[in-house]
Image 1: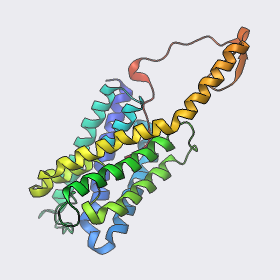
Image 2 (image 1 turned 60 degrees about the horizontal axis):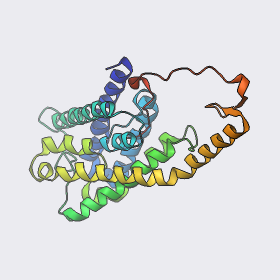
Image 3 (image 1 turned 180 degrees about the horizontal axis):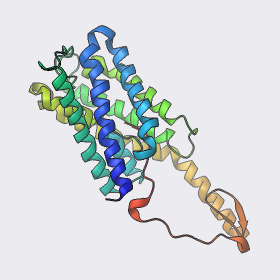
Length: 275
């Protein structure tokens, strides 16, 4: 592992642990007092803060579904994605362990969710319904991330859009299945809650990954005109004897810059903001 990847993986571990401990913790300690709106805002605000805090380090995925979307978009290698996934699940387990400690005799915090904020179905939605819901909500969330971190996005506002998107999907999902859209966030609390939450956790791992894959396909289709336009520009430059560098500046053939070899495979920029 390169030093850059080590820092990125460490940031993903810490970020995911914070998301679970603080955002899921807001449900554990306050779902009956501040309601779904308060919890949804907690998730969005935590992700918003983390996006600007650790985004420059790791891209602030803190969500295996987001990492899958970035991987499919060729924003990182499979090896990098594997390290991210390990860090994210480990961070979620660490954050859930802290919540378990606080709701034990040590912390004496009353668990207002009754299941450590874990996701489940049965009371307000069926299993198949929860599956479709998680695919849909994750599709929306990951699609927003891929679009606002793309080349055509407005610079500087990705974190805000991503945080608001996470709050929005939680407003829809909290009353139904607690909202996952994040396999790590679901697995961590389920391990400590046990029972039906642990038995049903597979859905909240599989469905978000499917939603992320669908988001990639749709975003790639929407982004096709950008690729076509770039190809047309390069073709026009080639026919006119003028080269185009990466900044878009046209240079006469005699003034072409010296080509520098690309960095090693582990050294490219694989960052894309999320959660």
